[in-house]
Image (cartoon, rainbow, N blue to C red; front, side, top):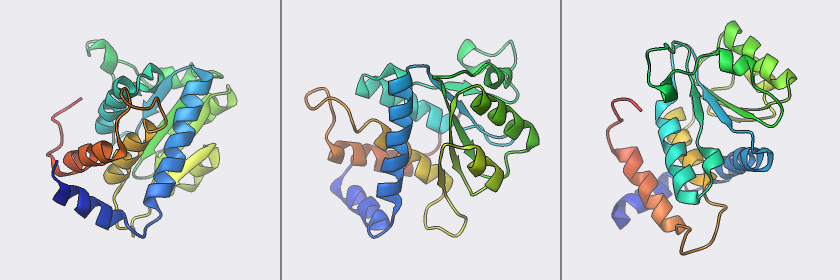
Length: 199
């Protein structure tokens, strides 16, 4: 990633609340997962599965030396014939317990079925975080949420990149850690590359 792309990304973010908001949300996510040690469940909606965020969180877990950040992707249409890491269905939310963290990514209304399962997970003691477009019911269920309104300069996919980049920031210093400029360069690369076929 060259300095021009980094400068462009910084220009887009300059003067906005996004760097602070995404770092705050990422800090809550990281703190919840690391302090509880129960694992991270990641789920989207019936029409949107957060494959890209799952892949980036796996990378962050490896780069930061924090395996707890590697999520279990919970899928609406999981099949027993899928590879093990893609075969986790919504029933996993019903089994969520105290110490686990559930991150819900919802670009639109999540639907009553998903909300019911999220409510059950919260009632069982799981920490619920939401990255969404402002659904009131989901926001009410979440312990912490980051809303990406439709009229903002950034879209939900870009904010997911910012969150995933920020979630690994608070870790061991160099040489194991990566400098923020390196992380910003990697993020700019991710934002300008074509999306992966499937995680």
